[in-house]
Length: 329
Image 1 (tube, rainbow, N blue to C red):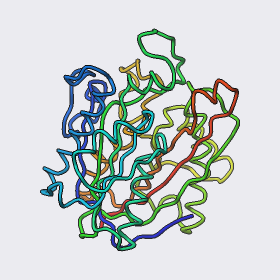
Image 2: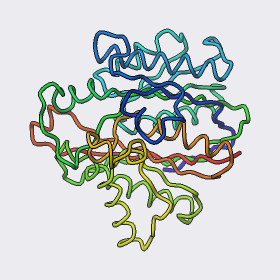
Image 3: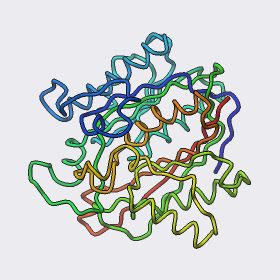
């Protein structure tokens, strides 16, 4: 399903991140960075909540809005009951929608907000996502204190919070359309190989988006996926070339772009987590769009929809991919 919008604009964005992201190649594009993972808090979970509050404070300051101006906040993260979003957004006082699309939550939030603005139900919305390496690893795999070895195919949960402010007021960037993803099961069950798990959902959504819109792949200056990492990126490129005769020479993955994979060996195959793609798109890519260095971007956020409990019960890991088209207005 592809939806079209003609009055949804991106007014502002804000990004806050941790020390690993600060050491990456996009450092200068982030609004705020930290040198440690606690951010002055006493637990990983409270540290993530602080990141959310930081990003919300930042976007209000940058946009000139006050809390009372915001119609809706949409938030998502990886913690149980999306608690980082719930606690972090509680002080804004606006209507709130919590979403869980795993690492696809950033685009899922954009689609919900865009639909409500297009329908005339609201005038504006803040779309927020966050993740924290330590809190997420503890919940989905093993606490890092265990020192469990990680294979080269593993991705590294990014630490940060990022948000965008959408409204019906014309600005330099607009959300032109969106393609909703479908749940895909390719019988994958390795939580340390998220690229292989999520690549099929990218292929499914990308092929449907091109069919729905009737567009050639080069309609877009850039096509970006959420966090497949270096191996998932190669799977998508190889599959599209072999099965659709499409050469994805304008395609990259945010999990690869966020870090220097040659020097930051600890990130293995690249970044992951809801904030991974948002940190790249809401900073570096927004800057390129605002300066008109590029004019059209297809932003595709991927998510692995699984529970460790069901994984231990030998269930497969499903995946999903949502896409939005960002264009210079």
